[in-house]
Length: 77
Image (cartoon, rainbow, N blue to C red):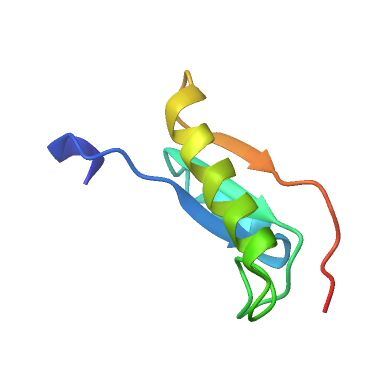
């Protein structure tokens, strides 16, 4: 997609950080959440919005390929 001019951001969980880094993706946002809840807990609109906004910010601010950002915080049910 990047080669076609469509910028991308991959959102992944911390459990897969090393694997995602090895893939050399253009932009990666790592969340502290568990597998299956990458954006946060169900109905946790505030956290889900925070993750999406962080991904959009990374899309705008990443200056070089391979940028990985770790979203701070802890998973809360």
